[in-house]
Length: 272
Image (tube, rainbow, N blue to C red):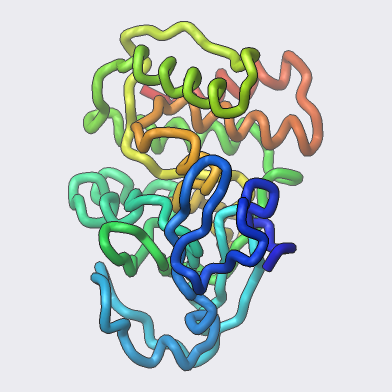
C-alpha cells in the first residue's frame, strides 16, 4: 500500500496505519477511509452493499480487473464496457450531488464528458462511481491542447446558468489557507472580474479520459485527497480547470508563450 500513488505516505503520522482502521492520521488532520479491498473482486459486485445509498443502476459484473492505481484511488475494469472509480478515502460527495440534480445532468448531455451511471456513497461520502465506457487513457502526452480547451469551454458554457456569483474573498482565503499549511508565500493570484464565477464541481483531469475511436471525453471524477485536506469544498471558476490542464501539459511536454495563448483562445472561443 505504501507504494500506491493514492496513499499519502509522506504526511501520515502513524506508520502502522491502513485503510482497515477506518481513520488515517496525517499532519494535516484525520482522513476517513474504508476497507475497499473486497470490491476489487467480481464476487463483491454480485450483491448490493447493505450499508449506504446507491444512485443509478447497480452493474451486473462477471469480471473485474484493476486498470491502475492513481493519485485519486483505483480504476477498475468491469466486464468489457464499464469502468469503476474506487475512492479509498472520504473526500466528499461531488459525484453523488452532480448526478442527483437532473438539470445539471441534462445540461451536460451530448457534451464531451462522462457522468457516472451509478454512484455508491455512505454517509454523504462517495465511495464508488461506475461509468459506461470501455477504455480510459491519459491525454497529457498526446492530445492537441487546443482541442482539449475547446471541449472544456463548451462544458463550462453549458453549466454557466447554474453558476454562483464571484466570491473572490473566499478564493483568496482558500489560497491563504494553503499558504499557511505549507508555510509558503509564493502562490499566484489572478485578478477577478464579474465573469469569474463558481461552477458545479466536475474535477476534470487530463490524466483520466474516456476514449471511443478518435473521440475522447472528460470524466466527472472525485476530488483529490490533497484538495480535500487543504481546502474547503468550494465551487471554483472554470479557468481553474483550464489552468490545471495547462500545468499538466506544460510539465509533460513544455509550452511556449504562444502555445499558452493558443490554449486560452481555444477555451474562450466556446466558454461563456
